[in-house]
Image (cartoon, rainbow, N blue to C red; front, side, top):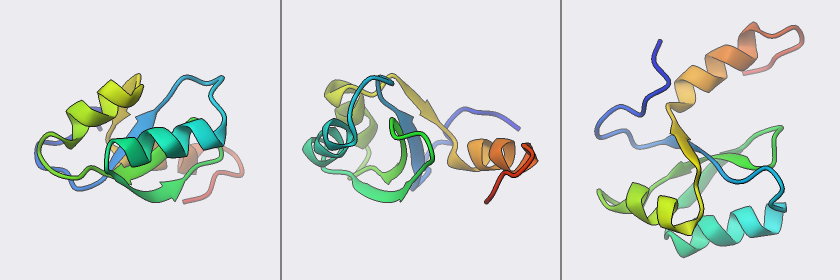
Length: 85
């Protein structure tokens, strides 16, 4: 399974700097006009729905370090002891 975001994916897991507070993360997502779909146990990683085809670029401009296929990280967490889906 690839961690790369599939072209045309509606949901994307995004990672912000780990020292950012939840408030900073939520503000950055809002400034990129994306919708939060799910928060994770790691406050700097959230699953979002970008606004449109330029949504990923807006998220990167707002501070995103990494974009990940959310199914890939879900599979990783589910394989950990005590992991949940």
